[in-house]
Length: 374
Ligand SMILES: *Cc1c(COP(=O)(O)O)cnc(C)c1O
Image 1 (cartoon, rainbow, N blue to C red):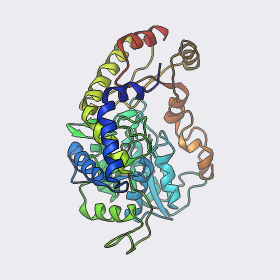
Image 2 (image 1 turned 90 degrees about the vertical axis):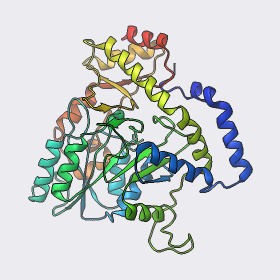
Image 3 (image 1 turned 30 degrees about the vertical axis):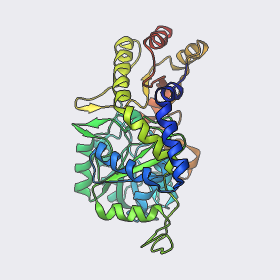
Image 4 (image 1 turned 90 degrees about the horizontal axis):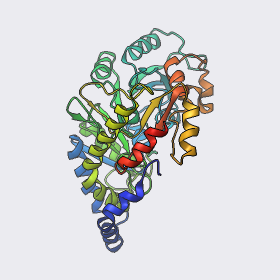
């Protein structure tokens, strides 16, 4: 059994994918070829934003908006400690400081009450942690749609407005999900997603995309993506990066986009039967009314986590632990000197959480097997 079954998916669309790759090999426009702009147009339509800028990874999709906002030394960006390293890494990479805000125990997403409190504390000069510099300037918020479930954007956006901050939605795991009728990637000032193969919409390598309705921001990010280009890439008006999506990856994504809504539908059914059959045996994921998860992961909480993992693995059923170590406890962020117990919900969640196989090709028989082993 695969944790994420990309082989079955490939079998489904093999001839279309092969044909599209061949087309690219034949036209030879490997960098920013016609498939890239076609994909950007389709993705923007899909999520309902004016602009989509594809890029080389979900990490660069987070980095480019921060660069466009001019984030650097002395700036504070509020984010969740219960996420993949990339979310906070890009903040530190630019010389700014990630300020962690603990999560809600049921959604595992940033807790808006704690966000409001932490912003006030920072603005009032309270010490955030031993290693967090004094006198940081609050600039923005990166909420993460963890496991595919959107964060609480009504609350977060309204706090951001009051405090004069921008919001960058980290939708690396939630492409295909929605919040109160609106698709993820359209829920904040700017949003980023990832096409890493294991994400809900994955390519066959690295890839990502950025979404916004802000034309000015879009044009700066478009320039930053190609070495800070001006009228062309040999006219350089700012310091940028090489952050383009390969044409071959765009071609693959165009093919996968055609079956994507069906896959998201199947993930809903699979998550539904997991939650029904595991009720009372483990803490199953909570999806608030009006939210649709893209089910990047199906994660449960159990006091017998280690025992369950051993049992499942012995039966040939793969499991993963997202996340073993919250970011404030990662060695890379040791310089911030967060104390143990400073993010109690994230720390407790990390101890009890693990994820079960989840993808659109999980059969009923496989799922029955997983549930019975549990
Ligand atoms: C995967 C992921 C990223 C980074 O995406 P890459 O394409 O691997 O660079 C960022 N944030 C979150 C929450 C992720 O899960």
